[in-house]
Amino acid sequence: MSGLAPRVVVITRTSEYDALKARHGTAEQVRFFLEERGRSIDELRRRDDRLRAALERVSQAIPPPWRRVRVDRTDLSRFVFEPRDLIVAVGQDGLVANTAKYLNGQLVLGVNPDPERYDGILVPHPPERARKLLLAMAAGRIEVEARTMAVGRLDDGQNLLALNEVFVGHRSHQSARYVIRWSEGEERQSSSGLIVATGTGATGWARSINGERGRKLALPAPTAPALAFFVREPFPSVSTGTHVDAGVVENGQSLEVVSEMDEGGVIFGDGIEEDRLEFPWGVRVRLEVSSERLQLVRG
Image (tube, rainbow, N blue to C red; front, top):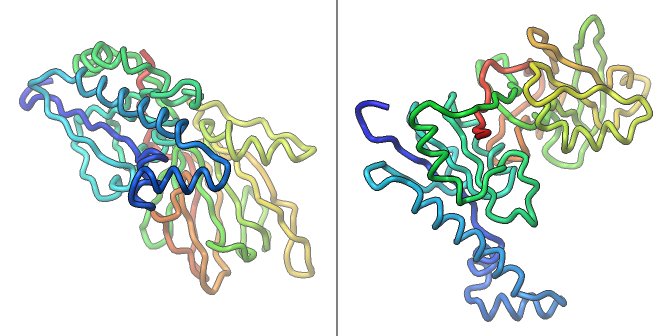
């Protein structure tokens, strides 16, 4: 890299221990709260210690001349990333998914602070490798896996990106009502909403839905330019059907949904309901493979 020194953006999220302290005021009050419910504070402290140790190791791995900033997950929607930022996500796999939608081609290094708790699919690297990998990222000598992302495009020009899946439905437990258009078919439906999942998301929510159905859909690989969609619990009635309940959206295709919800219709990605698009009656969304890809550092 030329010009300014590289900037490393370290993404993290508040530990359970710190969240409980913020809610209850002191560690002793947290201890009392947990012990009253048959739980121990010790395990939460150990998890917090592991996260702090990993963050300290990553901080030490950043060369002194380089710029650095730490961002909490809750601030991602307000943070302005620079085009050449080097992103380091320290936490569970979902933290990478939470970050991906705000990026535009920046390299992402996933660091696993607690391998006993986190699978490490998106955070495969131990903190000890951070310095070597950061130097390789800055030099452009790094193996990168380009993971497919999904995008929802509203007819008013708003877009929403997701690494795992996009949810379309009602924000409460009420039935979602809409018209779904897929391939040559069109159907009015009432359901618990629908999800459109990438190959990365195919290991989570989509896999659970797929496994519950007798007709198994071949789910895409994480780098494949394809998505899988599932309608959740479609209800048959005199005005609603259940035939268009699953399918694979190939690159260049789109799944179209038109809202028939007077209020409460929403679209959000990767479980982040706070960062959602409103989906009221008559609004149309096209769900398709995004041209954006998560650039995940492999080694």
